Image 1 (cartoon, rainbow, N blue to C red):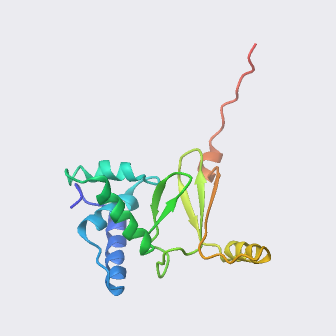
Image 2: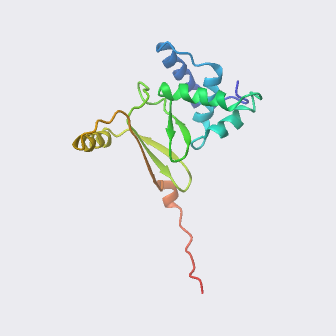
Length: 164
């Protein structure tokens, strides 16, 4: 088990993930559960080696394949997303029902690193429509947009002085 436990919100999400897996005939093992909990409790998207370092706090013999197999399982069951721009992962248990490859859009703040998942059907429809005009059928799409979140935008920016 994870040292110190996970937040109550994460524990609730992990219980839901276990039920989702059971309903699909899959098993959320303790290692998969712990990796998912680490992703869900992380303040920002978590990279595989960051997850490995954190997992080794309780499972000293954990190796990269352990984390990668857990990540593969979690992604396959739609419980996490991979953010390509960050080579990192975020949880996605709120999607009901979770499914791998559902249309997801992410807003990534350059200032604080916070990631917000959108699920805008209009945006997904616009992409499918534009792709259709090009004779292409979208099977799965993840859109990542970088910018500035409202909290970072509210912080006054330091004015740069010109060089003399």
